[in-house]
Amino acid sequence: MRRVLPERLSLLKIDAAGLGLCVVASLVFYWMTIQPLRERQSLSVDQHRELSHRQEKLGELKAATARLQEQVSGMQGELAGSAVKLESAGHINKRVASLTQFFTECELEIDDVQTRRAYSGLQYDLVPITILGRGPYAQCVRFLRRLHSTYPDMSIARIEFSCPPGPTARPAKFGFDLLWYAAADQSPVVQDDVGH
Image (tube, rainbow, N blue to C red; front, side, top):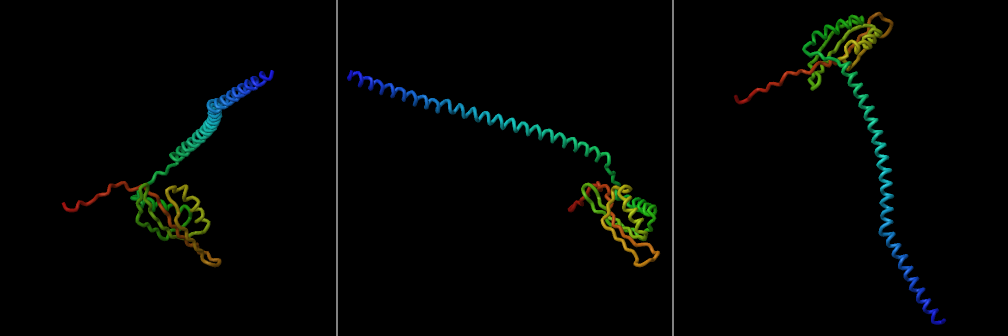
C-alpha cells in the first residue's frame, strides 16, 4: 500500500501538470485567438456607431444645405425681379433735369447743381452730384424719404442743413451730395502704338 501511494502521488503530479498545461494552453489560445476577435468585434461595433452618427450628421447637413439653397434661390429670384437697370453716365443732363423736377415736386428750390467727373468701376460708374438749395425742413425730409423709391440707383453721401436763427420766415438752406450709380462704360481701351 505504501507503494501505491507514491505511484498515485506521481500520477497526481502528472495529472496536475497535464491539467496545468491544458489551462496554460487554453489561456494562450484565448489570448491569441478569442481576445483579438473580441477586440475587433468591439472596435467594429464602435465604428458602426460612429458611422451611424456621421451618417445622421450628414443627413442633417444635407437638409440644412437644401434649406439654404432654397433660400438662395428665392433671394436670387427676388434680386432678379428687383434688379435696377443702370443708365449710362452719358445721360447726366437727363438725370439732372429729372432731379430738378423731383425737387420741385417736393416743394424745394434749387440754387445750384454741380456734377463732378464719374469714377469708373468694373460693375458700375459712380457720378457725384451736389445740389444746393432752400426749403422747409419738413419738405427736405419728404425728399429724403422718397429719394430711394424714386431713384433706386442713387444714394446720399452727405446732408447739410442750416436754419437761420430766430423766428424768421426765410427758408432753411440745404446741401445734398448724391451718388448716382450709372452703367459701367464698356468702351474698349485704345492703346497708342509707339514706334510706328
